[in-house]
Length: 386
Image (cartoon, rainbow, N blue to C red; front, side, top):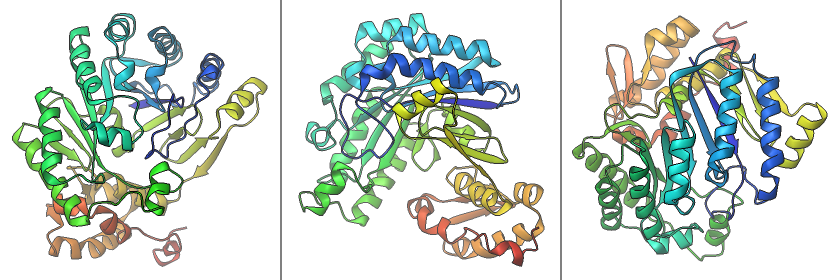
């Protein structure tokens, strides 16, 4: 079982909070698509003919591509890879790109069957702060248009912990989201990344972030409201109705193999990880001239163990002692059980017959928990790892 991620880095406007690789040179899209074709051709053996269960167009802004261009890429993938008949195919999209005609063409002319819409907020002041292209009206309209076009698997992104946001205003945001009868919700606490517009505003004293206690309250409001609406909080930032979890992202958390195409995209095959150069122009030139465009890293047992803990403990299924034993051995099991016991004792982690998962309170401080569970590479010698 495997997935394919296709990075579409183009944006018309740079959001003030985003630190993903992106560029505004949209005139490069046609030559970029040809480069993607070449990379997909060159790497057709990477997944070893595993069945592809998910395809994900992320960005950037994939909805800047026309439905014809998206369909062309999907047809190319289908010619090269063994794509499952019920493959989950997701397109990330900005609300102001999703006109009724665009959505109709996308639904009728491509095999995209899931939308991930970057609403971020239903408050126009928030959207201006985030430097988004759409307004709250656009967000609501595109959701209705997506339903009319025939899409029945729609995810929405929202951000909490924004400057000026209080628990009451966050509750109103969630009420609007659930009223639109979405199948999936991704809700992220705002983090200020170095080099972003918000980082500069924070340093200049132009904005103030809410206190951590306020953000914690907003997280618990999210958890409680979602459960009341019939959603399963299956990962720290992701909630879904029954049958609508993100199969693609779940593949990452379950450490399934995946191929990433495009600049800055990562790939993983269980033994190594590789990532492409984060530059559109260099990426296109490399594919045209048949030169290297990726860096590869062989993963040690310690790195693989740390990654297993990072992804598994983010989910409601948690980390399993049997999996740790089968993949890493008894010494890792002993280390894990020693390290995590303090969080079981504090109530941030629950142990159910060797399966350890975080409580909502544990999720909110997950960075703190995980840093204390990570094993250092130098511990190889202590564990007698060759």
